[in-house]
Length: 237
Image 1 (cartoon, rainbow, N blue to C red):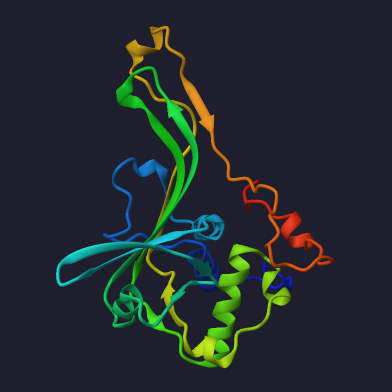
Image 2 (image 1 turned 135 degrees about the vertical axis):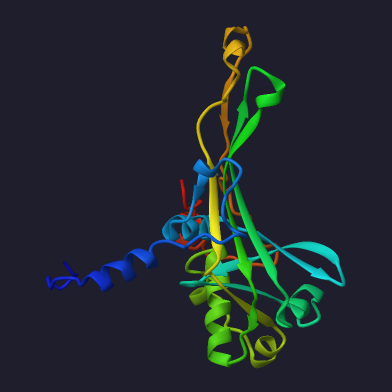
């Protein structure tokens, strides 16, 4: 049934199911530990939204580069931005293939043997070609998404970008159409004979937690800490 109580056709149901899954391709299918692969769109988007930094891989004349940068997701697209002088952005804007990745480190997995040590993590790989966002209204929407990705609610509180700042920012949009997630959870997976060893084994959980906000030294007295800063927590916490 639809949200309005009307029957959903077979074609509609198939479309809704497809929208909830990003079909794996040869480039995104998880082959190593395939059980850890996840192609659910909601899972992919949640990892992208929680990550604070992404890495963008590209090649120039056969030389690969991987650069860290800030990203933001808006629906089925990802924004990255920076100076028009950025080699990464200028290269990406030309339509070269990109590989964007994020990783969330959730725990150190200590096994009984050195060989089986691991980590618990959630990661996403997105592959595609980006294009430049040119329209002023679209650039402003992307800039808002980027600011609010770092600190939800900040855009409305901050001074809005000037015409010169908008013109001096290069924003690229990467479609979220070819992607996959890979997740490891749980404890160590030792060899059966190693379970008899008198060696501590388990998981050391890791979390990203904010410290106490530090006032800028030039901030006038009387300006109180905003509630959205005081309440900020990592999305998964």
